[in-house]
Image (cartoon, rainbow, N blue to C red; front, top):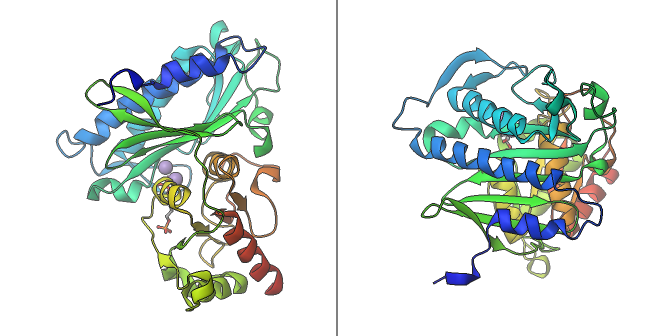
Length: 337
Ligand code: AHG
Ligand code: MN
Ligand code: MN
């Protein structure tokens, strides 16, 4: 029985507003609308098999990938929610080539910009495996009242004011940080509310899980190959061999490792020489969460959050997870250039 101990996401973010001395409520309203969009998308995801929203939408997105119907729907849903929050002056999405801005005065006055991967793990939609949404929020640098500009979006990840994800899994969870810890909320479908279920998540320093698409092994950089070999070697002192776990949805793979301890790896490969994952709306938000939970995120040699983005859809090699595992990986990469 949860009874009176329930704390909803809305209640939690209103209470946390008091932690910021100059908070005006704008940011609180923005997060509230993110929660609303997540609930809408969750409904669609749950009904996907019944209402003809599985499969391809028939379009190709900016990455040259087939758009699924749910990609398009989730994108639309988040854009609508953010616009109606009146606090967001622009959006960068995996599904849109250019930034999205609006002409009306109210949204131009919004103080925040939003980067998102509206539906992460698209290849898992049709087979009933966990998928997610990833988001990242910055304060704009252009003047309020004007249209947001590309420069607002090309800020390094260390300037994020908030980041999070929604995982549509066996339960639906929203996990976010505003830079003072990581908090997880589980959707209680009986009342339609995200309820605080994971207070201040700390990830283990050492993990026993490594998550990588090992089918690409022959194309991995030497240091990554050596690290994978190390993960598989038997050694009782370090609890090896580690377990291999890979879902193919960054959100779900990262979420599991965050709670259990582990490392997620998406290196550069011959097919994707710059890596596959996108800096602005996949790697930066996950890196912010990883660090806030006591973990680390790197491109192999540099902290992800310190990389200055050059373009909206830029890709980057990405490694995130338990801090001692990331240290070990970086050591292998340094020693095997
Ligand atoms: P998206 O569905 O948003 O395009 O992202 C898919 C990403 C990510 O979720 C996952 O970690 C990775 O692609 C899986 O790639 P591989 O199939 O190459 O392993
Ligand atoms: Mn993705
Ligand atoms: Mn996506």
